[in-house]
Length: 107
Image (cartoon, rainbow, N blue to C red; front, side, top):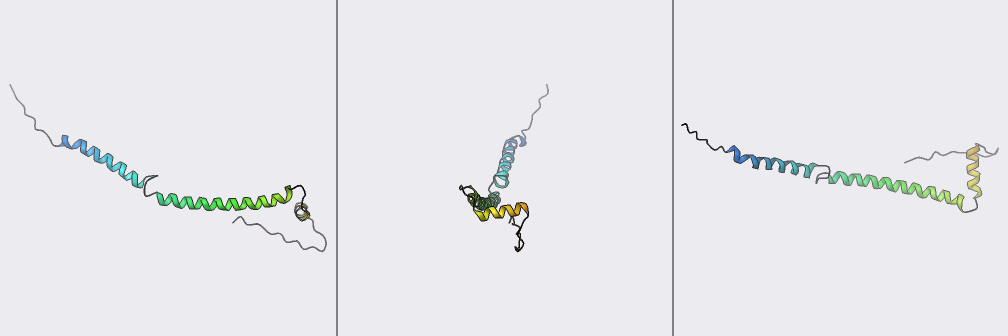
């Protein structure tokens, strides 16, 4: 009868702690560098500032348009506004008038 003695290896005891360390390192890395991690807060704040600036620009543009629209909607059209719109649409001017067209910049 043969008897074999197996030595216990230390690798068996290290497998579970190694897997736990790998999982912990993975989640730690993504907690810092991930899309919503600690490191991405600065980029999210920069994007927030950019979007707020765009929002303010759009709001100011809308206010200007609403002011111009209010001149046409209050029941009586202002003569200057009607004259300006008609001349622009028809490309007409009187003989002694000097017409200067200004291009509105989108900035």
